[in-house]
Length: 206
Image (tube, rainbow, N blue to C red; front, side, top):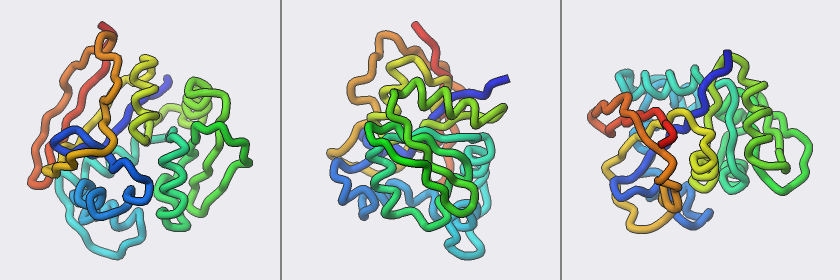
């Protein structure tokens, strides 16, 4: 049985998930948005940041998200930023399918991550990710434009937002241009922790 297609992101209170400029993508504002994750034990282990870290509901949710993911899909913008910022052992440890116009051979990294470059559309990337994921789920990793393409195409089953107490003021809005007339949401979880509020919804067609 095929798994679900989902995305999970951190979002500011005013609806942004990233700064506009690639140069700022790993900068202070983005770090503030993601700061709930970096103290977590699972993240510290996965990114080789050292021993220790927090154990609690935030840590459990990060671990559960990782464990359910059998393959990921991302856009070229996210890949370009991550290629410069990720450690040599990229943090996915699964196949990753990059939606791009570029033709490029697969890029294998230590630790089980291989990036595959797909230049014939989002459906093709998702089909390949589903096959690679097997019974596990496919995560649409980002960025915002890629997530929106999949939502508007009716290809996302579920999404989770970690609502972070940060204001951006400008940047990339998660739902800028969403086809709201075709998407209905069914609440699954609204769970506050000390750092963020975790919101999960299933997606249904209207």
